[in-house]
Length: 194
Image (tube, rainbow, N blue to C red; front, side, top):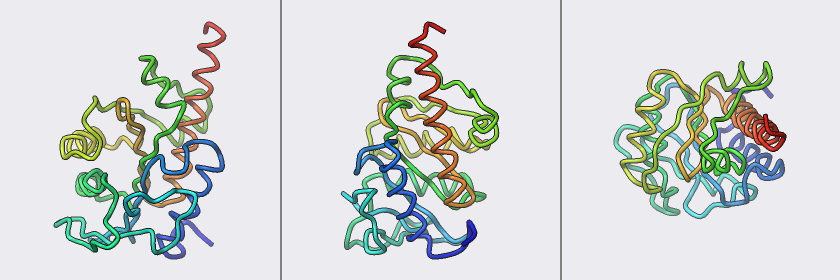
């Protein structure tokens, strides 16, 4: 199955299970969305969904332009973050918001994530930071969209988590894994006094 094959909800469910299993987040630590390339609607995780227990019924279909969509179950409280990001970046088809443990720790310590390997440089490329805004707020959604509008695919949200983008769910997943790995290596280097 290629990166574009299959229902986006199934692809996101696999991603959710894998990021929890890999220890990037605890079960409910984030939310996910994807759309078919160029579509005006996306699938967003439902409010309260556990990332490692997702099925097709845990996603809500939402119109990217208007924000209108299914209301049962309600979408994630971060739905505006996803919609603003798609509007700012029509080239992307997946938005992965995670409360990645080591990324959050480094940000709280005021330390930037250092790109250590060639994979980090290739997949992550650039990390931008968004100052603190209350989770679920329009201010957070707008600030994140502005931060990634020029092409950055990885953003750290102060005291909150990260947002990783891709033109496929698979690419967004690779970026999320590489961002957290870069954060872990940065943290280890700091422990060694480097």
